[in-house]
Length: 417
Image (cartoon, rainbow, N blue to C red; front, side, top):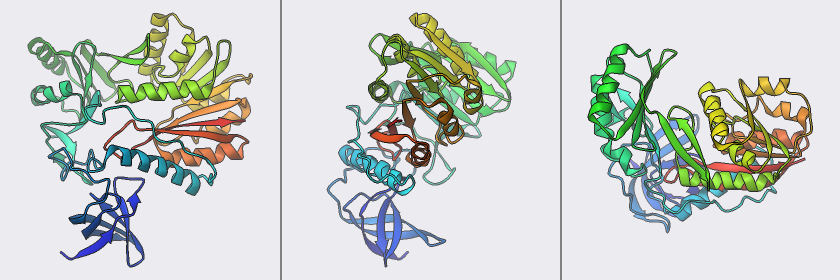
């Protein structure tokens, strides 16, 4: 196949790097900023060129030797050939670029990316796909299964339980589409999800797994509107000194506990709330932000769609002895029914699709501050544009590297009225 000499300019919002060929932008997989490479074109579609590195002629200053033997096949860690500091700077630049291009916000200073110390072995939860009775990650840019034996971004206890999970999968009558392994408080919790409804035979299979594997503390099998639990499904997630979430493994929690503590600390700082203040926590989950705020005497009401998460949030509030009201339901729908009363702050942590449904409702409540936690800079930029149009100012933007070795970015943004 023909190769083309390319000079790599920068990383992009996505797994690839950017170069130019005859004046046209090329997205190059496997490249690092400053590389000079020979690349093969893999796609030409509607004017978009994609390529992969065939040979690194001159490595850029941020290129490092990738540690994972599956890097050429697995799609999970496409930035592991780039030094951690360069990844963090690229993420800061991507957030700034998305805010400027999609949000029209060109004069906002984006702070340097915060990061936890170790960019490896940080994930306390991994989710793998199934193909028949096989278990692994999806290959790069495909649904082809890569049956990995190790994962260098996962906590080691999860890796040692891959054979256990595969044996359990082989014995199930009902095969889930995905299997999640999570670090529990006294072992590992296995969660199979996305398939048909489990059977009683599957419960017996899970019970046998627990009997022969003392380091598996619990199993959840969900699908077809049913949820079967065998053993102890609870995780303990530290948020700050003296405060942790106790949640079932099928409730959402951040996968990087140390980085999540940075996110919590940043939200507490930017919200600037004190005892007696009033706040809403939208898409509150099990109380990742609401519980630390409630411990400080803030009057917090949370809204969350997942009944599993809200049940855990209420239980955590009782366990910690704090007052935290939580409502189960669609965020925009519930927000529209709440009485309009003075609010000091709204904290929101929406899913990847953003909060376009809830943003118009915020104008009615008019909080003095909004602290927006985002896992997608494009939807953050879109929602920021709408908030600014409604009269808020974007005053601080803090990226946090919750997902080292990948292009994914967590960002905390502060808006003031």
